[in-house]
Length: 318
Length: 200
Image (cartoon, rainbow over all chains, first blue to last red; front, side):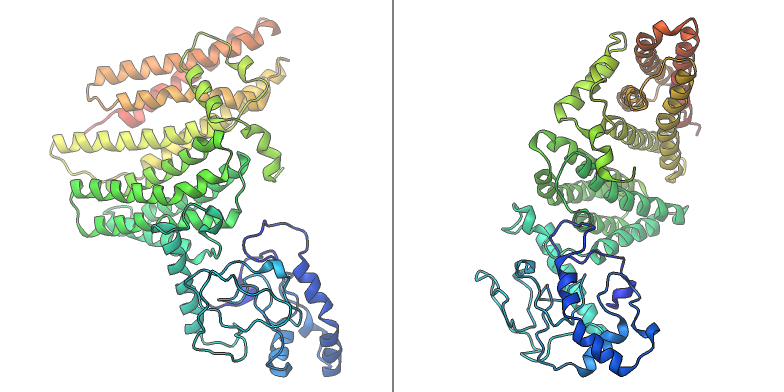
């Protein structure tokens, strides 16, 4: 997946872990104050006006500007991604201003920071072991010019680390805030499509309808479950919840694959029951912690309902 | 209209409230459901009761079809249309019939809140969930009896609660209530015919 900012859905200019709000974030304002020097240089370059209109309203500068700054800025500029292991999702990596100090989330233990902190930024939390990557102390990474394989590798690493956090037992499970700090939507997308494809392969008739129903149920189900928690007065972040519900599909994916390979009804029932319990166990702490305890069952029940209905679909498709 | 906060008041219920309302819906002759829910009508119950019913009806129907095909040693393939038609039927019924009723009641100057009507209809569908579970039994007469009893209970629940509300609005109330009763019975019959009538 290429990391072009313009092709991503419009996302607010906020570091991960914050509530999504429509108001302009401090990050944009800081970037704005850093811009005047570049503007003067841009005028001196006598570019056409059309070159400098940002294509995407959420980017603080245009593509031409970014490439320019790559070519002409000093390599040792204080360029700091807001999220250390990968360039920030929602802001431009090239910025002459340091990110706000509170924007630094705790590093996942398995990640590798590739940058050197400079200026008034806080040090990474002492509890996290910081390993130096093979890139060393060189210039900070930028996603526009790195090889595609690096981007893919980084996204895959994130998917694996998120999976380990969510689906497998780990000491951070009880704290939903830590559960998915570095959420992404590639993992859930892949799992939903994989489940739809597996069910479609297993079906002997109406394959495309089966895929359509599975995909629609899972995607709409994740959105409806998130809205359900929000309407009940719970506190979750919309996309983080979508991401979590997508990752919790992983056990059902495994179950569907096993059922595709071995078509025995009893085996299917056992496999689906086990993976269903696993999925529900994975999703439970996050959903139950998000709402008022008096409404916990109201938030949890629909999750069980969705996973049970998908499990039933897996058993029934032959 | 499109913000989450606009709809939050309709989800302001605790687990105990929802369980109590579901329990109330099983007793058709009490007639005080609308009063009990008039200050806090919720949309959680209707939506998730409907969704659960869709899933239960589709899965029990699939299971029943599978069993009868296996007993008669016939080929069986999963019919995904059961899920889609089930969803269309129940969501459509719970969405549009209260909407129509709201318009009609407004016309006959006995206005009832739209959300209250949705609440009433949504909870009235709950009785079909145990009815679907009982319809696994492969005896045709038993299935018809179950469908009839559930339909009668559900229709009476809606009718009695509505009658309590529009009794004072004139002589047309009987027609409206009777129409509502028959419509709900019709839904029960449709449920039985489409999902639980197996021809092998």
